Structures are given as structure tokens and as C-alpha cells.
Amino acid sequence: MTADLDQAWRALESGDVGSAVNSLRGGADDLRPADVGRFVGAVGRAANLPDLSTAAEALVERPDAPQACHDFGYACLEAGLPHLAIPALRTGRANAPEAAPILWELTSALEDLERHEDAVHALRTWDGPLPDWPGGYLLAYNTLCSGDIDVARELLDHLSTPEDESWDLAHHRITLMVERAEVARETGPMDHRDLRGWHFALTGAVLGRISPHGFDEGMAGRFAYLGDGYESCRTGIADLVAVLAAGGHAPDAVMPLPDRSSLILGLATARLLDLPVVPVEPERSDALVVAYDLTDTDMELRRSLVPRSPGQVLFEHASCWSDPPGVAADVVSVLHQTVNPPWGGSLRVVDGDLVRDPVDERPDEEIAEEIVAVEPREGDPEVVPFTEAVARRWADGPRLPSMTSGPVRSSKFV
Image (cartoon, rainbow, N blue to C red; front, side):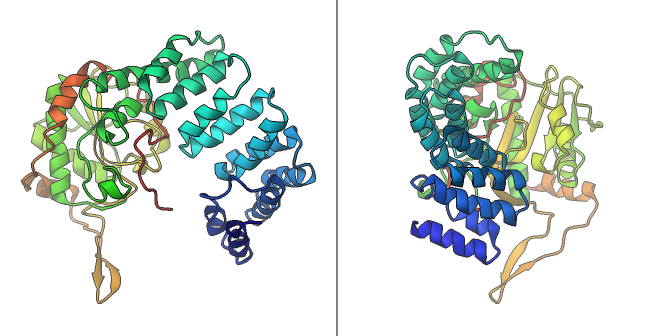
């Protein structure tokens, strides 16, 4: 057993299941399936996941059996453990290269880890032409997420229309992504540093602010922890106004989502745009939906915003890139992993201790007026020309979410 697996066992035996699992995120590929199976079986028992422990026990008994490898990999994916699925799925693939279901599970595991180049390599090892659904689609999707727009376009053009209607949404999604990537390439390099371009290609959102903090040290324009401020909120609204004008949208009302932060931001946005505030109606056309952070919104309400009503724009100030909310906004101010709104009780270090100030309990309208009164900082000069360049593919089609960072990767803290 490797040192990483020894460490994982020690953490598990101490009762820390999360640390045990996370300690193998960067070092599970080369483990033997039987060793992974024994460890995952113990994880399943500790976490009360009987399906996972049953599949792990079967793998330990027959670590080279393709069916056992497939079932174990599937169980790991269902439990949110894609990195622990890979050794068994690769073994199953080697022992049964003609078994497509093992390849699909291996591709899913690599996708979940955002290892799109590895997924492309795995799919390319298929002997003969891949079946279009899901093979050709998976190859096109992972090729695009690896950063190769031209090959993704070629693969998309050769995809047949799916006979199974359950693939229609995936077909539409990859079509939109490739088209947006091609449009974004007209205004930027679309390389592994072009965060705004790739965020638009994958989600359809125009990103207002690129974080300068640690850009070349692994963050690539995204925030990890963001202690938000009033100036940031005001600047986000200013960027929104610029994007609306550049994209040719003139909303007739503001619909704040019902959580407190969204209500505050929505009131400020309505004041600055001189628009009425109306209750949320996902079907309403030509309205501006305002969210502070969509992960704070009820899941059903989020899902109701995926189908786009004509002329409607969804603005999200602080969007969680590490745990996407399940609906893609049209305009995003900043990308964060963790955010604390300015009225949420700020964190400070006092005499070496971390202290949280109390939540600002003033009326929402009063806090909104404080946002309005702040002078925004100077916006990114690239936002308006970018929006003008991509306007023909912006705020177009359903707001289908993306679960990947794509070619522009950022350090993720777990």
C-alpha cells in the first residue's frame, strides 16, 4: 500500500471519514483495485452507505472481474467518490475493452474530476468508431472542455441526431457551448488563462470581474474566500448596467429572489435602474431577475429559471464556481468558492483570534441605500467590448448549468 493509502486508513480509523477520503484525491489512480475496495468498504460501513460497501466487498473478492469493477465504479460515483472509482474502472476497461458501460463510467469519473484531457484519451482508446450517443457526445464535450474548439466543432458536426429523446438536452447543450466558444474566440485568445471567454462558452454568462489575487498562483481569476463589500456590490451593478446596454436589453422591472441578500441587492439595482420591484414570476418576460448568490435560493425556484422567458435576464452577483447552483446566470459579477456578504457579519482577527461581527439587522431598504450611495470602482474595460462581440449568442436559449471549470482551472480548497 502507498503512503497516501496508509494516511487515509489512519484518518478513517480515527473517525474522520471526510479527511480519509480527501487524502486520496491526488493519489488514487495507481492503487490496486483490491486495496481501494477494502478501504472504500470501510468508508461505506462508517458512513452507513450499504450499496457502496456491498460493491466494495464484491470488488475485493474479484478485483479483476469487469462486472465487479463496473459496479464498484458506479457505486463510487453515486457516493460522490469519483477519484476512488478510477483504479477499478481502468482495470475493468483493460480486461473487457469491448464493454462500453465501463468506458462510460470511467469517462464520468474523469469528468467529475475535471480531467477532461484524460477523458478524451480514454474515449480515443475505443476500438473502432464510437457510438454517437453517448460516446461521440462525450468525446465532443470533453474535447471542448479541454480547450480544443476546432476539433469539438468537427466532432459536433458529425454527431447524428439522437434517436433517444433523453439525449436531446445534451445535444442542445454541446451545440450552444461550441457556438459560444466560437463567438468568444472573436474577442479573446480562448486559452487556458481566458476566464471570461471560457466562462461565457460553458455557461452563457458575461463575467464582470477577474480577480487579480493569486492569478498566477493557481486562482486564474476566481476568488477562493471573498469577504464582500458595498463597493463590490455597487461595481457589480455598474457592470450589469453596462452589459445590458451592450447586449441590447432593457428590462422593465426588477425581480429579486426571496433570500435576504438577493432582496437587498435587488432593491439597490432597482433604484439605480429606476425600475419597479415586482414579485418573482419565472415566466415573466423582459424582467431582470436579481440574485446575490444563487446557492442561497430554493432548488425548485432555481430550476424554474432554467427555461428562459423572452427578454428576461438573470443577474447573479457572487457565483459559486466550486459548487454550481444548477442554473446558469446571464451576468455574473464575481466567481467565488466561499462568500460573506457585507451585511452578513464580517470576520476580523483580534489579538490573533478570529472574531465575527454581528449580522447587520438594519432594514433591507436602508442597506440597499448604502449600496446605492457608494461610488463604484472603475470597471474592467474589456467587459463592454466582450459583450458587444458575443451579443448574438448572449441571453439566448435555456440557462443550462455547467459543472466544470473547463480549460481554465483554479485551486479548489476542500
